[in-house]
Image 1 (cartoon, one colour):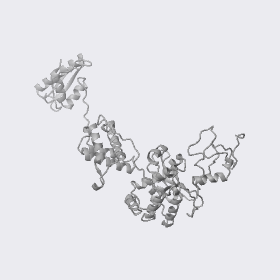
Image 2 (tube, rainbow, N blue to C red):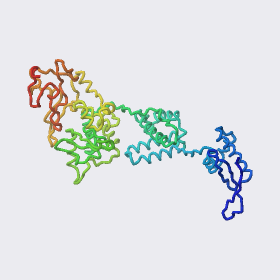
Image 3 (cartoon, helix red, strand yellow):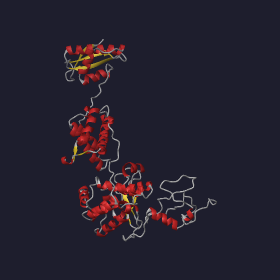
Image 4 (cartoon, one colour):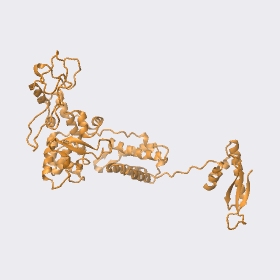
Length: 487
């Protein structure tokens, strides 16, 4: 049984027993313990005594407390509840978690990620945070957003105007998915620290998809755009994307003159976007002859001691590019510099092994296939035999090798010319090896190998042995095909 006792609340007045407490047997070990209640009335102390006795009986026999006792436990102060829990009369209270608002959580999350993310990624997170605030409201608790609200937010993203109202443009599916991925990451982080029970944005699709840019910038169009640029600096920036596959401006503006290897026709490119990945901080890219001319022009006009190849601001690149395309009387090109980079890879992939092209561009083969490689109209015309190669890709398919001073071309290496050179050098003599098509032939059939499109085609590439794995033995100097007996 529990009893009420009195005690002195002040050590200076030991005879003044103005405090009251409860003495009871602890249910776990029946030890006699005390709980001091402070300066309370006798009625309050008696009420606590009854509640303690009820809780003690429940703990001993394993029953449940009455609704009145449960309600009393809910209403009492935290210090008294902690004393009761300390003696095993009830479970400790779980500290209530303060769920932040949308605005507070977005700011907190972005602040923690600023050090490990690139400035461009932080900018995209801030854009997502603004979109979340605009729709849900900055004062809304993140715990009040459910799956239905997340779906409505995604639908709102696709329907809201982008840019000027008269443009009537809407957010693309690729950009919408990027915002969804950012929102998923924010709410997933909140779930990890126990602020919310689940992630409402997890039901949305946020997988990356290729942007719908089927536009291919032909060589003739690229030349027209270059001529329409306001000065040599902007001509070089566009050429770095179209003929060098550089990302603009993150890679073009990091290029230095020390990165240019004039003798070997290569340049070192620092990739700010992929430097966090192993062995992706920089890559080596071949210098296209047209790009070499513009680089040499820029080098001749560079000031003394200038290290950066591109000195113009990163701002207004899109506006200047759009204006140059308009002056060149060319159909508008969405994402000019990204489209130029894609066109560069498409042209390279038609002439060089894909693993090399992907390495030059700075991504995997899978990314190339999903996001970069296209099928220009000229390729359809060539495959259909309708007039051969059109002007759009004639210069792109026909490689040229220029001298160190950017002089006129001295060698043509398109597919037809390459085949004739092989015939003249005896590789196809006496029809010992028939011409094969683009598809590699099956081992064991009459045609033992196909014409490789990866022979040496430019001065910056090392010599490739056309005989290896193609039915010829020995080295590149061996000009006579093996006979059936020799094989």
